[in-house]
Image (cartoon, rainbow, N blue to C red; front, side, top):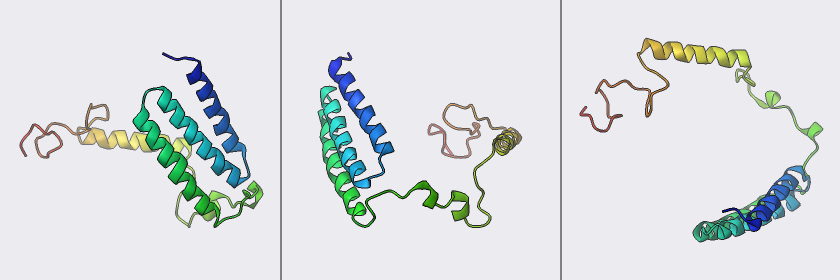
Length: 144
């Protein structure tokens, strides 16, 4: 049953998540991530998941925050503006494809279906795309 405490905690979590995304000050973002973890732990406690809350508080708010602060000590405090960042395509070595276009993705899907059809396989099988040939141990009840 959802009560007022759940709604308040979820609202705080959403506000803090948006603040983390918008911040340019990395130290403040790391501190807000620790607060986010503590609020998550309190939400888990309210939902009677005390073991998960304890783990979130110790790992999420404790260890992760310390590791982020250690990493932050090796970098600058402020995030660089976007115009200083090179584009991803410029960073990729020659021959590595950039973003996949819609037409390329559709042709890959068509090719996948063609290969599956040639082999007598289907992509809508429940556990695996394998047909029941008995030649492997994918189906645990069958002998090889």
